[in-house]
Length: 558
View (tube, rainbow, N blue to C red):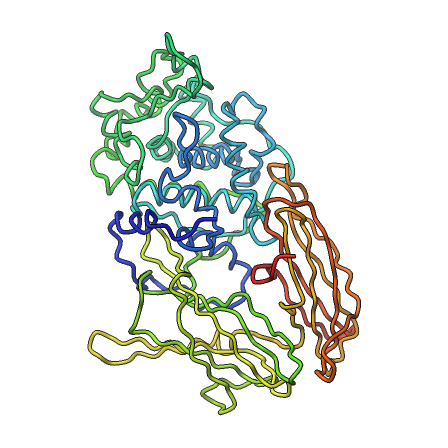
């Protein structure tokens, strides 16, 4: 986890982004959504309490590896090797994380990089985030950070992980131009797209002599304790390392690219590819950074959207969410009240203080079907931002803060949902007020089924223990409560499945006279770094109330 370090703030300023909230809007988002976890992975890259995989590649090169290695380039290469065996006519392969089962093949030389890439991503594998989707987000954030936001590949989720190896077919440097062209055609890409993708993929990183001694020589003297990397171009690393020098230097015949002017012409695959159309495409890429960036954005989007025919990706790209609740709890008290707590993550103009914004939450009572504008029954509570809770994209104008709340309501009143009212003072002095109603139905906060935070705990770093205490409202007449947890099936597999384990609840001592029955379950898993979630389902055989994909954040440690 990363915290809000000064270096991160400097990195945001360094890329020249003025944070704002004027990004184009997609169709109205309804919470909760199966894309919530992926949205945080994609956009909450820096700041406090970060759990996104982006923390390893944002800012560009932020995670140091062995000498000569570039983590951002390795994440991009992993996705290419994953997709390169696709057959679009047969409808097989693509971005499906099958690379995790294919590292023993000669075509996947340098398996350490593939292995470590999947290990970095594995901690964020959940029932709502496949390894294939995480690989895609890893590529998007790697390139976004190294291009200083010049290349933003749209993300559409829904990829499904393979359960075993696919066919071979990743092109190797010693293959002919005919072989390369045929391989890219199998992937659904023509000659110009092949040239563009190779240039886009080789603008960062280089060839490791440790893995390709026939291409990069071993030093004549001195220790051989690193990867002996020959970079593809002269840019090096940093937030501008994704540039078009791979093209300009090739066209000018001054390239250091070992796959273009290497000692062994048999392995000069980039030279054969870039020359295959008389240098027309590579010359166009060299003509302008903007042409290069736009071409790469288009081609990389096409590449990551190559998936098996059994997979249907989301119909539109995932955009940052303006209002997203988190850590919602309803603690039953012994004075005929319940304490509603949680936080509201709001998109903000910047990561700094915003004195021109006021926020309030309006809680609808139990059973209410009206908006707060239609009814006078809503309970209103003003909330303020936790200034230390900011998160942001490092290279896009996207920032968030969390507004925590803790409000007591009578048990007889209860709660069904809430609205969020945001008022912003404009430059002309006028106040603009926006009421977020989650599509009209409000943000759900059903008090039928409530995890009790003071009577629950979770810990997975040393013991893997958890205890859940859940209150079920008696007048709902739900006769059974079932629960389950979801987590990776193995803490060592590179592409583990997400397994579901049942939780057994039994009645426990509750709060007398509250109108709620309390249930308790305890469970222990292997300790380790992974993401664990839980589901609750209460039913009477005809009516069912459920809360799915609940995380354990906000609970005390066991």
